[in-house]
Image 1: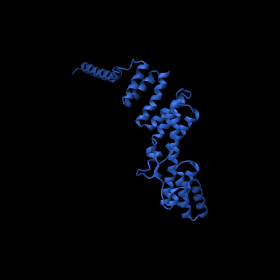
Image 2: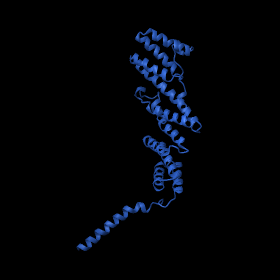
Image 3: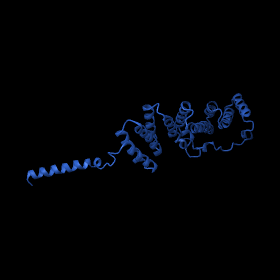
Image 4: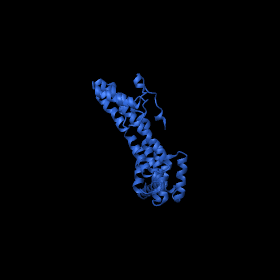
Length: 265
């Protein structure tokens, strides 16, 4: 084949490849859409559960119209969509970014609430005491972070429409963290680590004094001190237990009924 024809064919092929590479941009039907239309499309995708499409549309909206109400709403919705997808790290990153960029936004209370929900969403893996996983293997860090987020919301925005639910979840989390300490204390007691058991139960009494788990925590402390031969501390724990729970089933050698507080949500 003559060289000039070969060069022409090569040039034509290169142009074809280049044209193909531009094709996705050429067929992007959203390229001339307004911010309002992009936002409406993203909302439709969210409502349909098409979260990947929603994220892509929200990203286009923010990149093309980076200023104004629609961009701010896109940032909020991006955090929500990642939350709905179960993408905790990305959801938290989006939340923190929004708070940093818009600390005085009129709906920043919602973002604080969402941050709490993102961490709270791990509650089943953290506090499902009926699972086969040993409770000492669970890290309650997410629960504490959720509590802190909800507390920031209720402290900064006590009249927010999200605050009542946040307070309910805070009560749940306090109860859960208290019960967590008692479960760990029982774990140590069963293995003969009586001092560790007493100390862990004491954390529940000290840090969460008004929670249902305190009754059992005092009982664990009493029997742990008894096993250690620390009679004075045992008697003191029993005295506090009897004073606060005079009808406790532990005085009759029983166990309390399984509470339903952890099924609140």
